[in-house]
Length: 197
Image (cartoon, helix red, strand yellow):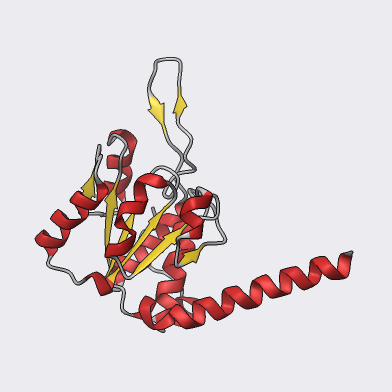
């Protein structure tokens, strides 16, 4: 039984490495990374205190991943169906210029951003976790989901990340992009010198 489990894990890791290898050229072209918020930048939970104030949890490791991408000229954009609340403060902390909240139709919002920034869909990756992210799928080069995304989303993703939303998923996609562009080793050898949020 143990041998079967080990074999399944080895096959899974081999298939993931193969998939990443096949997608490397696409990831190398990414200039814009669009992120959902709840379930991607956060764990998808909403914490309400005794004064009815909503709080959300963010990962500092995800923040460092975003900073590294920005340092290499990759624009981060957030599109959220939720309200701005704490997310706007977090986005400001991270220097994310383009942020959109209370969005019902993410595809329509995507087209508006595309018109504004004049980007090519081949240079865009999107990370989501639920059904309201699906309309964007056919309009980006890479549609990526978190490990704890809805199963329907995972089935239709170009890549399913190993990490969950709010717990390293954004850091993981950041590393994948930087490795594909052959920029990751610079950080491994020299470290990161800018402020980490």
